[in-house]
Structure formats: C-alpha cells, structure tokens
Figure 1 (spheres, rainbow over the protein chains, first blue to last red):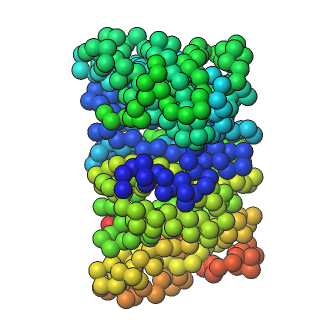
Figure 2 (figure 1 turned 45 degrees about the horizontal axis):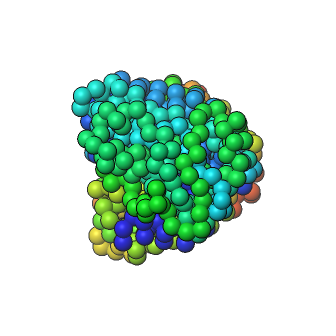
Figure 3 (figure 1 turned 45 degrees about the vertical axis):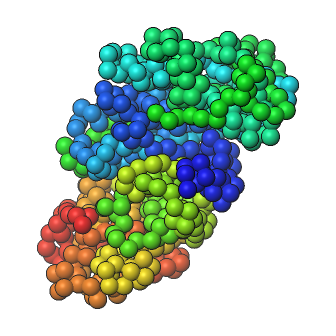
Length: 286
Length: 286
C-alpha cells in the first residue's frame, strides 16, 4: 500500500492520530523522522539539520494552536563528530528558543544514513483541528510559500543562503494568535495544494483560490525555470511549514497575527480550485 | 568520538537530559530509535517490533517512577505492507495497554532499513533520578536478567518463543510502587553491569554484588554455552528493561512491588564489584 493509504489505516486504527499532533489531555505531541537522502540536500549543515528537523515538529505544534513546551531528538549517524553534534544541538536549541520551547535532549544512535527523529510537545485547552472549514470563510496562509523550494535549488550555487532559507521559523506565536479565530488549521509541510485537499476532505468542502493572492517567496523567481515551474514550487514543493487555516474573520486575524497573513481565497461547497481550474492534489514529490 | 563521549557532550549541553527521561514540569519524555540490523534479529515479527520499540520507551518512563500516559512512533520501512503495519500497531497498542498508557499515533516514513523511532510520555511530581544512591543501601533488580539474551539466541531454533521473550512487560506499575522508597533508579537496557556503573558514577559510590543473588531468566541456562557465557548474558547483554534501583528499605519495597524484586547486593563507598572482584563496565555489544 502507498504511504497515504497506510496513513489512512493508522488514522482508522487510532482515532487520536490523524491531525498535525495527537492530543493527550491538554498536551499535544507529534513526531517526525528526517533522512539525509530525502530531507537534507548535500551542503546542509548539521546546524541547519538540527534547526529544521526540530522545527518541523514545532510546526505541527503550531498548527494545533498550542504553546510549544519541549522537544527531543534522536541523532543517528555513522559516526559522532564533536563539531557536527555540537552544531546540531545548537540548531535544535535555537529553533526551540524562537518558539519558547525547551530543547530537553534525546538520544544517539549508530546508523548508516544520517537520520533524525524529533518529537515536540505543546499545551492547549482548545486545539484547532483540520476539520472545521465552513463555506464562505476565508482561507489564509502565513508568511510565504516556496521558501524551502528556493533553498533546495540554491544548495549548489549558494549553500550559505540555501541553509539560511532552510532554517524557517516555526509559526508557534502566530498559531497561538490565530487559533481563537480559526475554524480549521494545519501546516503546509506537504505544500499548499495538498494542505487544501486535506482540509477539504476533513470538512467535506471545497476551496476557491486566486493565484495572484499567493504570497510567493522572493527566491522562487530566482530559481524557477519558467512560470509553470514557479507555480510548481509555490504550490506543490511544500516543506515551508507555514500555517494554512480558515476563518470567518480574516481582518481580526490580520490585526492579531505577529506576521503577515495572506487571504488567498475562500471556502466553497465542493472542489479545490485555483482561478476556476481544479488544483491537483499533489505534493512533496522531490 | 564514541557514543559514550557523545552522550556526555549532550549531557553537558543539556542539563535536562542525562537521565532515562527528560523532565518538563511534571511531564517526563523519552525517545529512542531502533533498527532492523541492530535491534530486530531475523524472525522478529512486526507485532514484536511494535511491542518492543514502544516498550523500550515506556521502560524509561518506568525508570523515573512516573505514570505512563502516552506513546507515539515513527514507522520507517522500504514499503508499507498492510499486514505488517497492522501487526506493528497492535503490538504498540498492546504494550501501552499493559501500562495504562495510550498509543496515540505517529508517522510513516519511507526508509531503506526498517527503523522505528518511539517517544513515550509520563507524569510524576517526584521523579527518581540516577544519582541518589547512598552507601549501606540495598541494590535491587525487578524480574529477571537475561530474558532478551535468551530470546536473541532462540530466534533461529524457536522463533515463536524468541518473539515471546522479546515482548517484555515495561515495569511501569512496579516503578510507581518502588519510587517512594527508591533513592536512585534506572532501567537495565544496557545490562546490569553497565547500569551499576552508571548509578555509581552518578552518585560517586560503589556496589558490592553477590552473583548467587542474581535473578537469572530460565532461558539463559538453555542457550548459554558454559558458565562464563551465562554470566555474560545475564550481566552484560542487556535489553531486559528491568528496573535497577537502590533503597534504604528493601523489605518495604518487596511488600509493595507487584512483581518479584531481588536484593542483589549493597551500595558501597567506591568500586563496582561482584563477589569481591571488579565488575567490568561493559554492556550491549551484540
């Protein structure tokens, strides 16, 4: 079975799973695994790897509208180089600091391929699920889309900038500010298009997106071969770890949010479309 | 640097780490990664793998004297076979049920080698650290030693029994019962000898162990080549996930504990010895 079918099986078997985080009382918990071959392009520093892998889990906490409290990681590698390990720990700690969470440790493991498993914890009495979108509401995106795609393409020519683009800021503070006004929320780790399809499926609704409202990261224009490629990078590449959410009061959200929020379209009865055309349900194929 | 030096580096960088679990308020959290080549011998079923990997993290929660609340896992494999995934989930859920924790989900990941990353959460207002042993106290072990070693050797001849031996019961209820009386506690995942050295280092003390008091699992005699081998399996093989702890009141502990507790020796001023001879600081080399 493919990964989506397998995830469906897990969702059926475990009602507590299936959102960005599992909920245990007022605690939310999420776990991820990242690998050198699939997640860290050549040139990714261990500092960036620590930042990004722990950040990915903190992003899931943000998507629940929760306060981030703590994170742990398993660092698995063929050997343990002191400078690499220190850099990883610094990245992990610093990304936690941007969110107010504590990086409290983890474990080491000998493994052929550099692999990181991270877990983040959060607290909230009112988690925002993926399933509350209602037709007529606005659909919003925090920050910009395509930042990771831009970074990914820049590793060969400008690794320093690529690493910088890969060190995103998890939207924990924004998630907290948005949560009271959001009817549904998730992060854009699989790309905006895939996120919209997942939100649509969870609430049995549709979306009408306007392409000229998409907040595309400046690096996309630099690295894209043409307009079609740019569109691919902004909509489908994913891994931007921005928040995608629906709200009946987009103006209130924009007043409250500490970072820019773009209204990119609205919730409809059925079908996920952009500029009147179906938006393919496709993400993270790199 | 080797894994121990690297763990020392993490311990220095992160004061919250360095015990079986990190402590975040009243929550304890622990994470582990297990791999097919190092942790699951040929013949290990996915049911056993789910049980054992989640159980290893629950054992760390037990070692803090905490109540186990929840666990998550990342299941990484080259492909997702429905029957294997279901068996894994069942094992993960059932081992949680033995402890009162909820298995709340996790993630899937495509990866060349079957790899599992697990995280468990617990709650306690009075965590038991590794550092409180005082000379004159008793040192105790729950259950038996060598069960995993026996299982490991039986995979070729009797895989069903080997799998059964690999599905240990995390000592959460015992940890809760023992905690009010324990001055120091950890689990025996690296073997009794290594655990004693770690407890001795943490409290700057020693131990005097008597070999005839060791509660050795019955399978060890079946699989061991000779007495020296049996001793190796019971003391150094590890992965038994029993609790090793020190206490000033061993009789109270034995009355309270839901499972047998063996007093195997006492805390001394210096040097870890068995039957008057130094006990090598060596573990988990299989």
